[in-house]
Image (cartoon, rainbow, N blue to C red):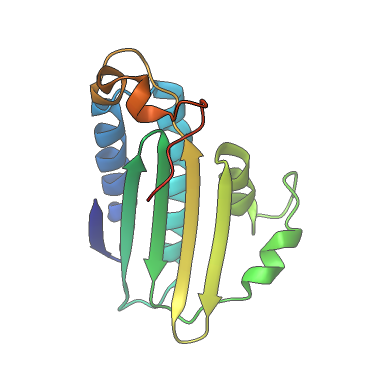
Length: 154
């Protein structure tokens, strides 16, 4: 799913509810949903706080098997994404805590940023499923390959 949103603080709560509802309907565990929406709200809050006022931003959420991939993209001025690699998880600074939180709850967090092109935050998490729900009902053969690994795209 993909949503294009205005750069307004109210959109952070909106995208949290949409993502939580979609993942819950698919049978993702509440704890896993909490991790995903926490990271998503941190990424969206960064857009609201740092992108240009007139900018919109786009959130794309894709679930393929047990893999959830999220991209949060803005068209702002960009920043030095390489500097984020040095942000410690236990930072006492207000700046960078969101990045540390995203890294703590997601399996993969990547940033791509360029001046005048904007920023893309990519978040990836392997979903924990409860037994009910569409993803659980489809069966493990769809969720994993015979070797127990997630299926690969062909």
